[in-house]
Length: 136
Image (cartoon, rainbow, N blue to C red):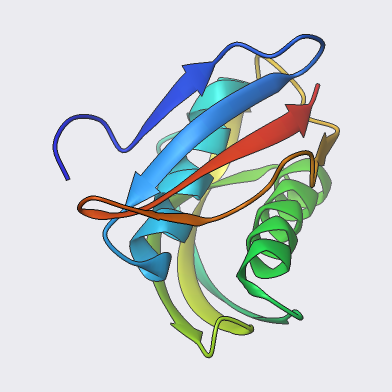
């Protein structure tokens, strides 16, 4: 796909990102990076560690929300950001990820939740696209 993998789009009350990826794995990685940039998360230099995340959901949209919500939870509770993602999505309902964490230096905008508002992963030329609305 050409251009950026995500972009902020206007939304009435919340914040939204239009995210693109060649496949579900790339779409989910780009969504995670976009969400962290939307929040203005800055990582500190220092020790990193790896974490394994496994999630199940009824469909790919629910899996995407579960993925982003899990990352938000870890960001808030453990004050870490994510610098690398290696993930696999199977049958649109199962995600296994190995992520690398780094300490957070700053969060400029707290995201309260990932919403299902008009959430639909669509096939587009060159891959997949979705718009995710975040409650800020």
